[in-house]
Length: 338
Image (cartoon, rainbow, N blue to C red; front, side, top):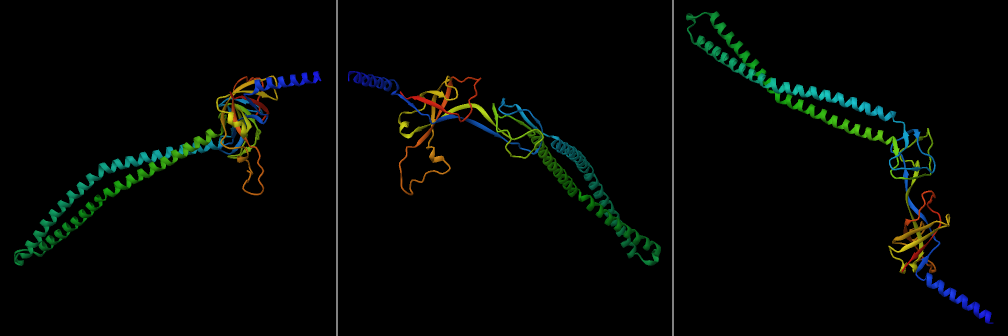
């Protein structure tokens, strides 16, 4: 009996000591490693001519991972460059023509106007001469002189009409200038369009080289050398070096958990590894709320179930660069709440 009481006392004291040591700790085994993953897909289609990574390889940000055959895109860029050069030559010729029109057209118009004034003066004199002969006594002149005066008047009138036509023709210089300016604007617009095409061609050419946006490990590789890849099809993922712990604590445990609290993390895969971290944040929603089929508590018979809420724990120290820490492996975090 005494021995039994002694055992009970030892168990009670041990339990009290254990409770005292761990009264300010909250632990869970519903936790796993988590992190960022980047899915890489090509922005252009083509055949893979270089593949510089393999499964589970660590890559650095900016490192070349894959190269698509650039020949088609180089040809397109060269064609756009040739079109641009041809358009620039046409624009230069059009500008030269406009300069010639601006220089010669006003002089032509002034010359035509001067010739019109001279023709009008000749016509006026020929008309007066013919009128005077008409008033002269026929006995005082000859028929040949009258016919000559009338012919001179008709010729002078014809010269006036010709000069007026020349002035009208020279007056279209404004329309010619506008047409030349419109041609230049059209060519400039075509140049801008070709330059935009060249910009897109250069972008497409740069897209033939797929580089790592972040440092991390290659995962889920779905491409081999020689494959023809399509725009937007996932080729592989990068698991970034940024790893944390997602722990699903019971909702009644959240009362004492707050951001900034220290956390000891036990990794099932590496029992000797001692990780230290802190509570970063608490998700604003339980795990079931964001599941594919959330519970409909307003229908049927309701059974209360304790919900679990994801808590993000950032790892501060203890990581061994020689030991991979894959996403999704089990860990047991212990939060010191006081």
